[in-house]
Image (cartoon, rainbow, N blue to C red):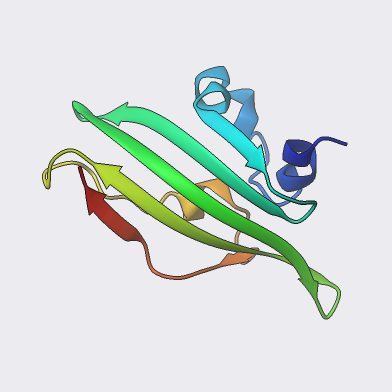
Length: 103
């Protein structure tokens, strides 16, 4: 099973059925339970880059994802959405607040 296949257990169903969405990710697997995912896309005329640092673990036999997200934007007018809620299954992840970095 590839790293992204393992991670897919924690992602919303059908997320990667959208080819444009699936192709917007680049994956770096650091270990069996640690990933760095990068995503780049355009929204409302702005280029947005996301860097996800992901750690998978079980706590009391409940699978969880710890995920931090850095958002790189070119303008303060760019959307600053926390996409973790859209990507991960409900109540399957936790992490620090969104970190926004202007470029």
